[in-house]
Image (cartoon, rainbow, N blue to C red; front, side, top):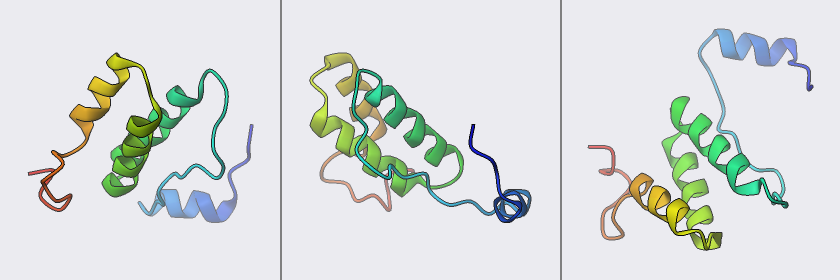
Length: 87
C-alpha cells in the first residue's frame, strides 16, 4: 500500500485535491473497472472535467454495451458544452 506523505495529508485536510489521472494506460481484465473508479473519485472530489475525460476515453475503448450505456449517461450530449452539462 502506498504511503501518504505529510504534504498530501495536509492538502487533504485543507480540502484541496488534485484530479486522479491514469499515469500510464491500464492493461488487463480489470482496467475498465479501475478507470471507472478513477473517474468516480474525480467526480466525487470536484474534478468533473477529469472524470468526463476518463469516461470519454472508456467510451472509445469499450465494446461492452452495458458499460457504453453507463458511460453515455455520464457524458453530456455531443452538441452540449461541458460548461452547461451539470445544469
